[in-house]
Length: 476
Ligand code: SAM
Ligand code: SF4
Image 1: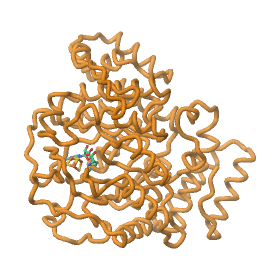
Image 2: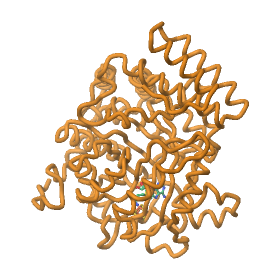
Image 3: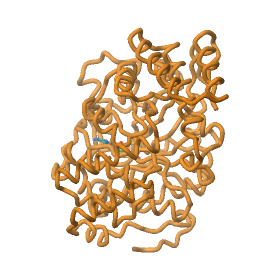
């Protein structure tokens, strides 16, 4: 591991903490059932797991042990998060890119993709289309290009927040973009973003070099690895990390994600807000080595193991995955999903193009293209409360000094009531008849489950006001 001295570029904790020999040695270990069960038992007490402990779970192959891991993940999700699932949508702003990531249709050497950056009026059109469907939380996605400077990103965020349609507005804008320097993050933070997401793609150095060839910005492994640490130092304390599964051994990537979380926890006293685990999808002009593609069974295991290893970090499951698998994996501890997503530039208003045209504008193919309303209904049928809540970051409940899970009764007193209010807003303003019927039945059931309290009285009154008047955005 090399310590890096250029402190202008990197964070205080800017060294390469991915010790490959150590991670590989953990992956080579044989484990017995008793060891696996001991680690599962530890995770059930909601303690984050070490790398060694995570590796024990990764080594568990026997079907009955895998089932025990799944059961534990389901239980931990219920205990820590309750039955809420937060919904968001991605909004691709521009696909100009100076990098050459071998897995991505936006890479600079791909001549087949149509390059486009949305004009302000087009951003407005996309956001209005999303608002008309009921969305409240967006993630803006950018290629890496000098056009997409921090000032430009901040301007896009401000534009999005300023748009209103009927009773709707976007209440949380997150960003997925290339890593910035400290000053860049500060500029973006001033626009009021929620989470800044950066995926390492692969934590394995040689693979990283192969899929990010040449002297591109993204080719600098450490600049990227250190990206979210710099964001934290610049005051952005909600950061998201992720790995693109399918580039290298899935077990190694899980250990990389856990090592990254532990590194942030150690140096900044707070782990990542979210972890994403996208799987490689087919993309325009992409022809990749398939030897590390992650199968469905391995995918389920990795989600469940992440849940047990980092009990307090949100897990994001994207629409890259097909509906049936999303439904199954959701139970293992996912806390956020996107729905009704379109990832081609302009896709929320320009649908109806032929498949080929769409392919030339999108980054990769999606697995779940059902409308938001259908996803909401399925969630409720499966016993989840779909939530558009944005209360915490708007009330400054973020970062080191705030851990909702550590505060007794927090989920019960704040998260569930806020989820129900945002659900009622959705049903009243956007829900189809069928979804409204399912949603109102769910709200009644959840209210009945709540013990009597002043909070419950207030919530019932708020739900009535949302249904009967134009009062919106009421949160605890
Ligand atoms: N350009 C920025 C970057 O690379 O960090 C941000 C956005 S990039 C458009 C978002 C993410 O999409 C990447 O970090 C990568 O993990 C994922 N991605 C790229 N190509 C993909 C593919 N073929 N299948 C699935 N996910 C892919
Ligand atoms: Fe550009 Fe990001 Fe695609 Fe890489 S993953 S080519 S950086 S848009």
